[in-house]
Length: 313
Image (cartoon, rainbow, N blue to C red; front, side, top):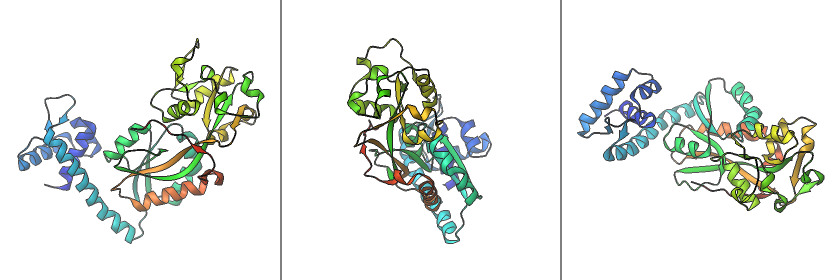
């Protein structure tokens, strides 16, 4: 049994396809297939049911995969110890970030991080929260940037900042006449929403204390993009809620459409989330440092509002 063989079965479990798994491991499909078969023969068990499409692990295979992930994590820590001792800042860092953060947060730190650490390769994926959690558990990602807290016992959240919610209202909407607003003044019948799966959508429901299906409206449109929703509001129709960092992307004219909440303002806690047995400690620490150095100082105050919970997984 070798670490390479364990990496191969982890890859096959992730992709559930021999060709894709081989490509991710930078080997040929026959090589990957042969090594997995050799491991099964050595252990005298069948790890994957090849009759299923996609390929699925057997019951004993699932147990082996759990231990394989632990073994591979521990082996990788040896390399990280050596890099840390040599102060070698290099390697690959795989980051998952949610769509309501990526267009506003990434531009603040990503270029400066790459300039400071040119030997580090960043692989950034924009994913929904549940996808990031799954990929962290499967060792497909090294770190996630998501809204917390979460209840997954395998993961640990390190808070970065506390971002307020703001309302973005059309000029002819009743909320436009107010300087500040209250949560109870929000009418979901006029609200444009992100589609299901986004934690931001769930937090909006928590904030408003209502259910959308109780509202009567002739047009229901749910988007995966806050930018699309903002354009609908710009057409003088309804309102939406935005994360605070989105204000920086607005023009001077459209910033007039922003309305802040009266204290205590609703906020969301944004964290770096890692697996409990995570590696690449140095790189993740440097990532956190770079983010904190480049966000507005006010966002670091954990007492700047009331954290809005959301339905976790």
